[in-house]
Length: 254
Image 1: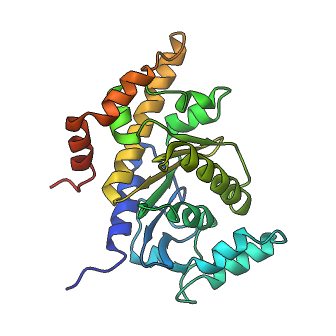
Image 2: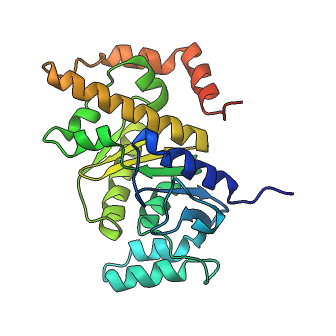
């Protein structure tokens, strides 16, 4: 029997929804996958990641959602209408309101999978007075290998349209400054978006972001983080063996 086009996204949702990981609870979080030049697969609103199946995935046309982002008169009613109308199958469940931010992230060259989660330790930092501690520098080599040298922190905005617009501006500025998209996008008082080329890569990013947050919390308790220097981080980012290891890590484990 041929594999369903939803299969990879269902597998990703279940992996990140594993209760033992503390990434999401209940119906928190969502995932998306590029399905064509103009369409995405995304988790439906209110569905649980841990028990996701193919009926929890909806395919959407990104065109009306991109148009919504550029409509200054758009309100909550317009958001509902656009999300409802974006469904390829009009009988499918409603896509998550965070689909708007998934669409924004999926415009970046090289991004095929996006995962949004609320890891406990990540949110402990994001909901503190020191959310910038997650993006002020690199603490250890594998952080650089998996997350890159530059992550992005987006100030709090109302989830949905307002957040998608603010994040789009921040992403554009980040790409202009660093010539690459951020693999980890931290949303203040909210959660994490992981952007990657494969499902395994966004899992890796989420796992590593959680570890970074755990170490950051410990470092803050002991007086503050001691970051790698610019040259040290650059060295890790460009070492041939680390470049090879980075490429291997994004492959699905056998």
